[in-house]
Length: 183
Length: 264
Image (cartoon, each protein chain N blue to C red):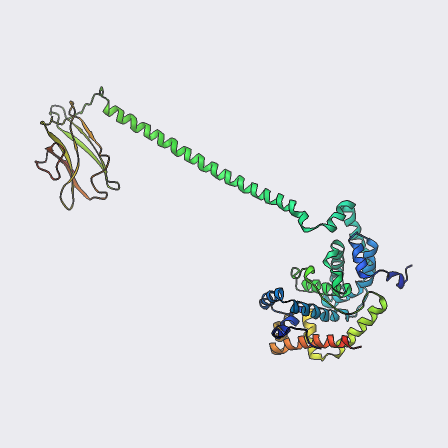
C-alpha cells in the first residue's frame, strides 16, 4: 500500500509533462493530489454527489485528453483545477453549455498546493482569510462564486443597491489577497 | 492591499472583480474583454483576481470523493487508450492546429463539390428549358415561313370565293397590333392601277387626322401583301377605322382622293 509521501512524488509541471506522453501513473498522482479539492467545490455548488462526481470525471478527463490546456508556467495546477471545477459545476447548475474555454482561464495564486503539508497550510490560510471578511462582503462573493449569480441578480436577491454589490465583491477579493499576503 | 492597476484604469477595478468571479452581466463583458485585449496591466490584475477567487474554492471543506470515482476515471482512460493505437494517441495529444488543415481542406472541397453539383443541375435544367423554347420557336418560324412561301409563290393559285352570281369585289384584310404599332395587309381582287399611281392604306384614329400606313400595288392577279419594316403608325393608337385610297407614286402625307375601301 502506498503511503502519503510516495504519492507526493513529482512536481505538478513534471506530472503535466508526463501526461503529454499519456502516462497513466502521472494522472493517478494528479488525481490523488487534487480530486478532494475538485470534488468539494463541485459538491458545494451542486449539492448533489452524483452531479459532483460527473464534474470530477469531466475535469480530470479533459486534463488527460489535452494537458496543454493548463500552462504550468503560470500558476498552481490545484487552484486552476478548482476554478475549472467551479466553472463546470456552475454550467451544470444553470443547465447551460460551457461558457468559458478552459484555455482562457488563467490565474495566478501564490500558494503551495503540490505537497500535502503545503496544501494543508494553504487551505487553512485560505479559510482563515475568508473568515476575516465581513459577512455581507462574503455573502455577495459566495453568491457569485458558488451560485453563479450576476451582480444584478445578487442585488435583486439581497435587496442591496447594484453599486454596493460591486464594491463588496471587489473589496472582498482585495481583503482575501491582503490576508493571504500576511505572514 | 489594492489592485495593481495602471493609473487611469481604476474605473475597470469593479468590473474586473465581477468578471473574475463570473458575475459581470453579459452586456458589460464584451466591453471589458475588448479593453483586456489591449491592456496587459488589466489582464495581469484579472489573473490575480482569479487567483484571489480561487481561494474561495480552496477553502471549501467537504468529503473525499468516493473510490468509485477514481476507478471510473481510470476505466475511462483505459477505454480511451484501447480505442486508439499508441501512435495515433501520441499524435492526437501533440497535434498542432495546422495538422487539421487537410481535414478542413477536405471538408471545404466536399462542400464546394456539392455546391458545384447543385449549380450544375440548375444550369442543366435551365439549358433544357432554353432548348425547348428554341425548338418551339423554330417550329413556329418554320410554319410562318411555309405560309409566307405559299402566299408569295409565283405558281400559287389565289382564289377568292364570293357569293355565287356576284362579281368579285376588291377585298383587303388589315391586321394591326396596337402594342407594337406593326401592321400587315393582304389584298385580293384589286383593280389594276393607272401608271404612276399606288394604293395607300390609312389608319384613321379616333382623334386626329388620318395617318399614312403604307403603300402597295396589286400583282397581275389583283393580289397584294404589305408589311412595313418600320411601322409608321405609333403604337397604342386608338383606331377608328382603316381606309384605302389611290395616291400618286410614293404615297401622300394626307389622302388626296376618295376612299376606295374602308373597314373598322
